[in-house]
Image 1 (spheres, rainbow, N blue to C red):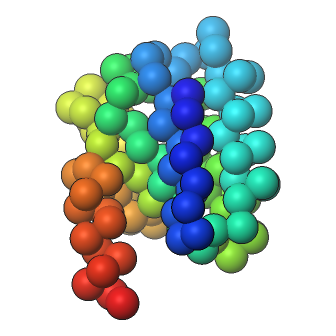
Image 2 (image 1 turned 90 degrees about the vertical axis):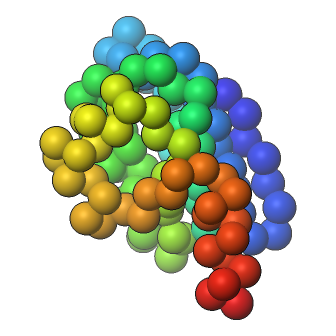
Length: 113
C-alpha cells in the first residue's frame, strides 16, 4: 500500500485482495492516512485491488465517515469489475464520488477550479 501526498490530494492505493484475513492491516493504514492528512481531498485508488469482501466495504464506509468529520472530500477511483459489482450492490456511489481512474479525478479538480 502506498500513500502519496501533495497539497490538495492524499492518495492511498492498496494492492491485492481486501478480505477478513487482512482487514485489520487495511483498516489501520487507511484510517491512519486519513487522520494524518490535512489535504482537502482523500483519494482511495482501488486500481490494484483484485477483490473486496464485505469487511473491506465496511472499512471504506467508516473511512468515508472519518474523512467527512475532518471536512475532507473522500473519493474512490480505479475500481475493477469484481469490486465494482460489490459497490453497485450496496449503492456506494450514491454517497461517495467514484471515478474511472486517477486522471478522471484530477481532471475534475481542474474543471471545478
